[in-house]
Image 1 (cartoon, rainbow, N blue to C red):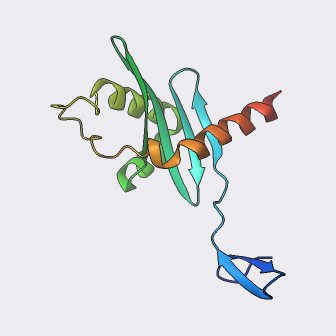
Image 2: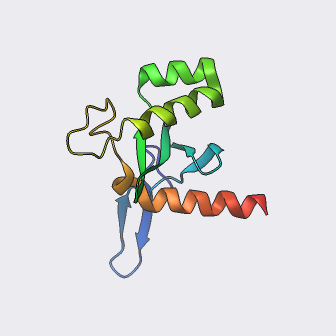
Length: 127
């Protein structure tokens, strides 16, 4: 059962009281570019997960789109996201001396389980 404030209410039968806790909302794949990026929606936020590689180092870099990026995405759609992913990749935000404007915005650790589950769900729906 869910309360009006969006909290899940769980009945604990042995003690006869209710516990309120926030259940994580599911994340959804909205768009993607094969082997380049995924766009996710989670709790009203759009997140771009960019596949980056530099020499022998490969990683993903997940950013929440800011207001300027959201406005550009509304105008440019998929093509804009491809250009943004290119910018994230080629500015190498994980490099120690990087001057990347995306440095410090990585949310990969925070959302790793949700992004993996969203991709699994998305792939299952495709097959």
